[in-house]
Image (cartoon, rainbow, N blue to C red; front, top):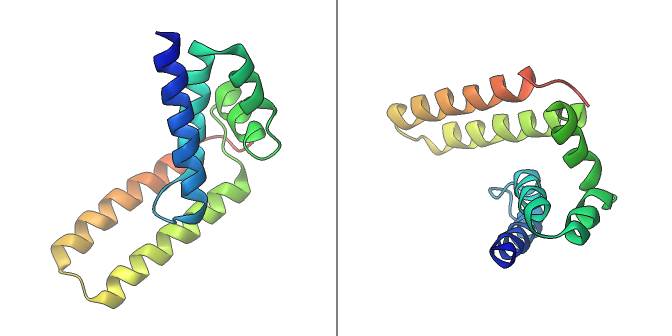
Amino acid sequence: MRFVWASLGLLSVGLGLIGIFLPLLPTVPFMLLAAFFFARSSERLHGWILAHPTFGPSIIDWQERGAINPRGKRIATLSIVLVFAVSLLLGLRWQILAIQAVVLSCVLIFLWSRPSA
């Protein structure tokens, strides 16, 4: 079973790395998922991801306090606003815009209700 957890962790890291370059694929949630899988499979891999200079601090903040870095909150908010603006500029149907507005608003509420790191 440890092999399955480790494989899922490595897959999550891979998807997270792809997400650095693809704006619709979020990086941090995949790294959080990788930390979850590594904690169940390999102390070495779990230690590696927690010690990573880029991803480690965000993962530790989330694990210890459920906190999100204020800079990350601002970047996510800006991304959400830009995505919705593009949808408006594309002239999407009002039903799609309404669904998008509700979902994105829920994401923003969740994001800003988390403690700051």
